[in-house]
Image (tube, rainbow, N blue to C red; front, top):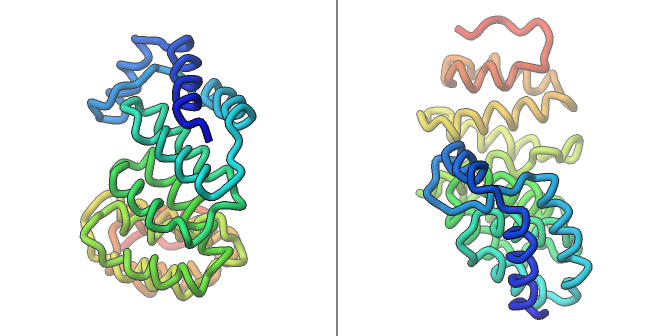
Length: 232
């Protein structure tokens, strides 16, 4: 893997698309001092597709080098493309890279970087290798880092009927007392997603524990379930 060539190519493409005014707006929206090029998601997808064609990932070493090569650049769009490399090379997404995903989650420290990793990297690895990955995500639910706790809650989003219901409900229960917005929102999101496939189980969980959870969590979790009573 020519990681210098990869980074140079991506930087050249994004620099050509850069929009200083939009970059300022994006940084303000994300509440960060991290620099942006000011490139939107549609253009980023094109750059990622071209980068993957020119700099393919063929080995596990390629995978790690490409992800970290992009991630270690200062601009936020570079980090978005690092996540693209990490999640779209699905044959390499596995428990072997959980330490890498954990590092990126902790270093990312904001929803736009964390959530894609939690769902499309950690979550996919969990589907592939549930016995190996489950103990790891269970350890995250009580972790000091809030973004790892959030990841442990939302990592089964999109698992549909393959959701480990006991794991989901255990993680939600463990964090119900928490006052952090991103945790309360994550619990509601995870429950709402699962309610598409098992509304009755989610209904029971919400009703059994509604006096322990925030209104935000309850309302988010109940959005797709008909005839739910109002919170409290």
